[in-house]
Image (cartoon, rainbow, N blue to C red; front, top):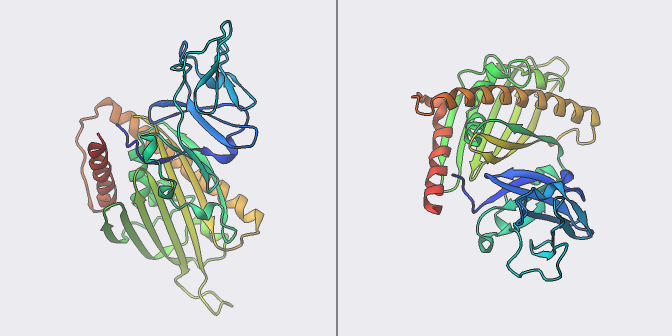
Length: 335
């Protein structure tokens, strides 16, 4: 089961065009396209006639025509034309979904339409704030979305999964500060005196750095990771320690019980106009998140063999456990 009454990322804004885009979200087929004025539309991707996927059709004006038998639907989902007959019954149509385009994403509300409040869209403003340089992409991950939530909240794995990209092999004994509110879970992970992660060496940091990761989760599956890094030892010719801040924005949209869409952004508040720096971060973080993808998909395959197999929780699991409990509580209340 999934939490329906909340905003999810359906697509990056750049993915949605005049050509229909089909995507499965929360177990439901959805088709996205743009009207002539550029406004994005989201409809049920299932023709009411013979259940053909509408993304196999084409956009004509502001309408979407099924590629199988030509049934045509307007942006509200109402059927406005049926080949071979003049009359279209008023009850014929497909579901439409509230969507809002913000922060370079198309956000969709899969639940009750009258509860779709745009004010509740997560703040991913660093993705389009001129004071930040942002790069990002999306990954299709063959694993349950909560496995990815746990992965992002508990960053003790970076010393092992990401030792050649964004992690430090010494980052295994961080000090944790833990907090849970009514609608958030936060883990602050302080790692002083660790070797500089490979991804940060090109910035000119000292060989040893102090790094903090402030990880905040909000339902249904949004995670902000604020990462300030600072020289921990003096560098010859440098009067002040180097300090830099990177933000990782993460939006995870369930596809099925064992798959999800992962939208991520790496944003920085320095070297905003440095294209080479942006290309470096895009390449490095893409490599790192594909390392996560490989591990999570392998984990899901093992879980699927025996979903009831026991697990063990340790101190580092607190954030993931709290987020999972919060989601279970919200889903039960919604049901």
